Length: 296
Image (tube, rainbow, N blue to C red):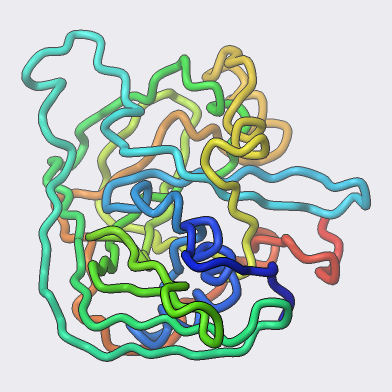
């Protein structure tokens, strides 16, 4: 397994993130079991608390393969259009409950080519779960000025997050102080829900959720990177008109309207290992790898 060369007495967050990229799936699986998505970049961990939104954009590569990129968009409450700023407009969109801490001894050690032997140790964690109190048939609207509104193809809502204040990343065999303890309450893994989209420009609360499956090899754009700015940027055209045209021509809906459920807890019952979530339809699966089959 390839990795960057790390040297020096201390460890930066950038170096810790390079190590995290290689072993994050194994660490989160040991903590929570299967079916969880590890935080893609440690620098962006704060953007994966419950009730935050993730976007997916589909593009064609030079080899005419579908490349699907994921990128965090921030809290749902900051993406909505609230023209009146009245008390009803500013009502909370959801609450977050916290369970734990759970004392554990999650220990993962592995040799990485070009890096050496690394270790990640977690001794406690807790869960943050979003609870959605909005009544059924409530209608909310995304802001028309959002630059990514016409280019994003799917939206996801973070429903549950596993956080830790004890996660330590260490490079063995080097200087004694070559390690980094992550900041308190760092999200290490999360679950999310897929938001269905309609072209009317409204966020309508409905009953029932579609669970969101994020492919473990999906491409994540790092916040504030050129790739992130490209995915998130662009000139916002008429969202509703473009959404209706795309629905007629390409059979997918515009994301300016999201269907949310009635009052329901977004959390899972336990963190014990369970069966993996079923993958999306092959036509909807994330395809970041070159050896994936072509799709029409």
